Length: 601
Image (cartoon, rainbow, N blue to C red; front, side, top):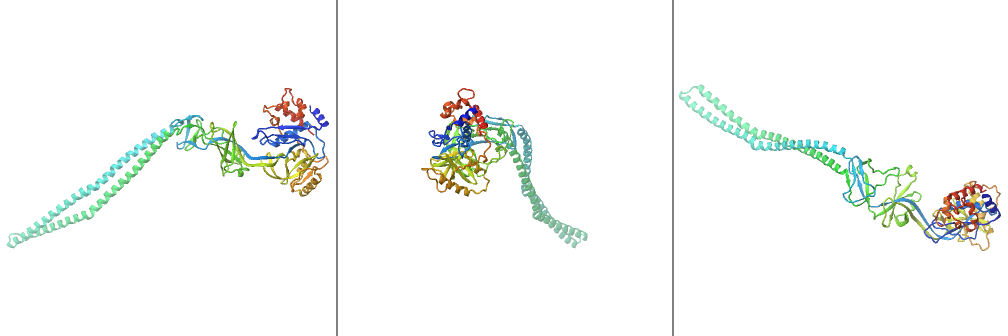
């Protein structure tokens, strides 16, 4: 089959067209790529597959046709006609729906515990419903031990209360009882002593009168004088005892009783604190026992919190160990939904709060806007391929049927360029930070230097160097000798002279009636060099048969029929349809690509 096609291609210079139709925002816009036909119009879908992949496909399919003999080309060329278009610059990331307002269900049991039972995710609950049950065996043992300690503390506290009360009564007892009794006793003894002293004086006086009369002896008088002296001493002793009682004994006793009262009260306070502590511990353990059964605080649907990316199972499951304050479950508010996506570090600086976004959910697109951009990158590791990304929150418009965990594709619009001249990315070649492309002028190809603006990885805004109607060559490195030589130049080689030569040659080669270029852009026809110029050696297709089918499949049925082949190439349909069923599937397209890769010189 390849021999026949090659022979036929050598005899003719017919063109081969591939129409790439892909769903986009504007269903009325269409792009047609024309192979070897410089006069054909070109249009491009705003939203489609990567242009580089399309180029590789057409480059491979180009082996089906003859290579037009040219002094500046090495094979058939895919061209694109420059036109004004709207270029939308966006970044697309994958994420999942979540709620911005969640009722969090956390573990309130101290330390770590084991999950005995957990409610299924997605279950509708109401306040008071059981959500999680934790192991209670350890807590129940702690409660039993704490009850014993509490009772001991209670007994000690009771004894201390009694001791403090006794100490307080002892002071009153001494002041109003013991002290007064001791004082009265001494005062009584003092009165007796005074009476005894007066009696002794009377007896002594009587004895002296009797001695003068001769009735008593001198010895009797001496004995009465001794008795008087003794009574006087006893009276002074009682007075001293009363003074000591009032001045010293009372004060000392009051100090001792006061100290005993303070000690009793201090011990009572200590025992009271111990009792309160043991009671608090007992209450806490009893509360921990209650916390082992977690109940719903609000109505709604229960979901599990997202597990770490490197884990294969969620953190909450039967038999799992959980810790205090760990988030176990969430009850989201389904009226406040958002998507969290990771924006690569190379693009995060262009993302601003309030930027419009389009969120794709299955077959529905929802408008949204950027709500916040993280200032610190999310943790990177082997589970993320060491890719550094920043969490970005995109808020959604309210919709019914949205549920947490739904897959979402978020496209954030970073810039819109309206009605600008744009060139496909695949048509531009960069060398030493300068950009150029090759345009088709008659049967020749000329080089144009470009000043480029923003890009969306499919089209680049052209600030200078091209105008509407110019026909640029896509993937010039595969077909244009001059582009290949430019790519093979060592870095640092002067390109100033090449640019001057390009301007001079372009002025000589310009066709009558051709539009003027920007003043600072030069053109140069592709040079004629011997065939020993270095050329790419890898001729294998850069795209799979499946991607080729997706590119050319107009009705979306996953295969190509003869109606979907370009009219000029339908004669080759039978050779491509290996099983003769009237349809070309991905495997047949892959086989054709591989044959073309082997046969392409």
